[in-house]
Image 1 (cartoon, rainbow, N blue to C red):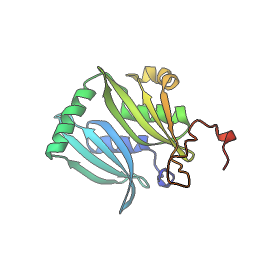
Image 2 (cartoon, one colour):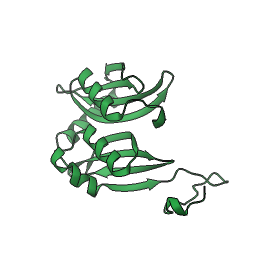
Image 3 (cartoon, rainbow, N blue to C red):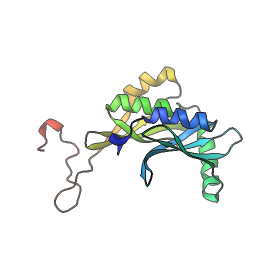
Image 4 (cartoon, helix red, strand yellow):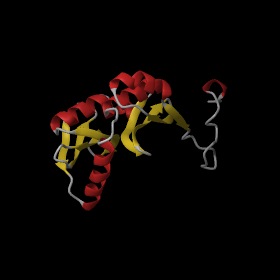
Length: 177
């Protein structure tokens, strides 16, 4: 799916924030009936929670709505609490994750860990995914955050029984293809 996106997540976040003034809290690359798109959650100043969908091929805004379901209102309160803490902007989290993994981010968010905000990103690296957690609260700390990014590899390959083939710790050079 990431290979089908012609614009990157950072550009999609910028377009979403321009379309609905506020702060991006979550972004995910999705595949739907209309093709590949980014689903971005924006928290506005008033505050409200908005969903902005950006076409991953041409950057066109597909959806721009204020959410008002009870579930979304609860999520708003949780996200607003996290965003009130010092944190790195979502687009910067994406940039740090991509640089530290040499991969493409397909899912990113700002979450709460203890008493601080933490960036989380799921990256596609080759045929595997890596989950990256990034601690830091400003652009000045992004290089340090990149060096300290905690990465967990997730091997999505299955053996002949449909179970995880458990070769997560093998180096690519040692792995039979």
